Length: 613
DNA sequence: CCCCCCCC
Image (tube, rainbow, N blue to C red; front, side):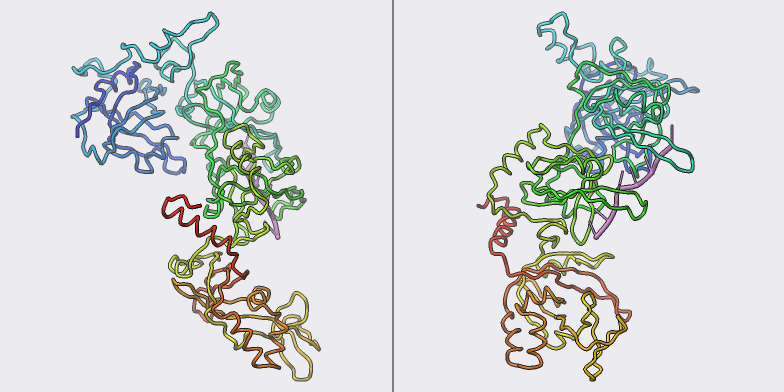
């Protein structure tokens, strides 16, 4: 299949002319800096006549490359670009085409070949390059946007609407505003002005260390092409802190450009800005809807349970319950901290604990069940559950005026009293059993076979409970569970407490084989969970074992072939140099039939795509 | 020039 590329577009663009939405072919890509997770790519692009290797993708388009959506030979429509000038002392200035947006017209695999026989574009020989005979849609032709505007009524005060970067930058159109896209910022060229929206501004923070002390605040800046973090120190804090407001537009120039430390900044940019005494910040009075507002990319709360600990997510939910503010001292830094845990829920019927810190913890009011939207929250893992914690860089919005918030609030207000949520966090009411697996699934997917313990839930039937050594005599000390040594003198010795007692307490440690149609598994169940399973106290089990063999046997017969829901902990344990997977149940409950049905329905829905009511 | 992001 052959495609019409916009022949001549590269020469026009690279010599400062305008081409509207050229159709070009991607012939290769190369990572620019490999030591950085926020990857920027240089690409080789062709218009069928010329090849241009001085082209790069704005970083927000990197995912298209990584996902395989954009591959070699792909034919694309460049819907937005700039030709940025990079100053170069020895060889003269060089133009780089920065692709700000594109649409894939045909996937590379389908195109399957290089179109035409393009030659490398050489800016120094541009006059000798043959001009393509085929006409291409170029700047000389009226732009559809401009034509439209001619027909619009012109009021004396009206200013031309934003018409893309082509006209906004000095490169393509010297007659209009001189601003540069964030995507073109690099340490090699510092004579720029960006027009940006401040999407978030941090509080002022002070530091004091061996190198000195000071204060700073940072802000996240976005424009159509990308995003970048900027930080102001000391004097610049006094100069700019009050003037900079979230959601407002500014012209910013003369900053220091540094490599961003990806450890501390999750913005999609390899660079960050530091304000200097030269830095200029000019508020832009007029709203420009072309510059994006704070963008959330909400993940369903149900995805948090499988999210990697440490990952950064945007999410939105309704505050169902709000805990009190708790003071604590950070172990590592000895810092005094205040935190508040709240539980948020969304339409996936998932409940997640969200931890707020400092001022945000103190100022939060949860009693009216506000909608809480978070950008850049951190997933953390505790006790087998997942929760989310706010970072200093996170943005928290309470009852934001966005459609999703209104929808969620409406949904929540219509919930019935008995609505049940699946909590993925360990500290909340229900405790976390992690994912639901069939026994065979858990075994096949090697749950718990890694470094760390893993937690999962299952519905299973008790196949067998081993009666031998199911109960033992333990130290009577409340928190000690050590098996005592019967001295046969009426005294019981605990080697852990290093004491003799004249009494003991019975404790259960059951070996139970549980199974479903997919497989079975021997698990260990301790005290409370074991009492829950057997329906009798450890004390009774111990007493009947000694006094009444028949009734003792009944205890086990009564639960055999009965179904339960288990919350299990699976972990590799080494014993006598042999490593094997151990599973234990930390929670055993009679099946909740409603919950069971809900879960099955949602699985059917997920597997079949059919809405089941 | 910061770079802490905490706790059970």
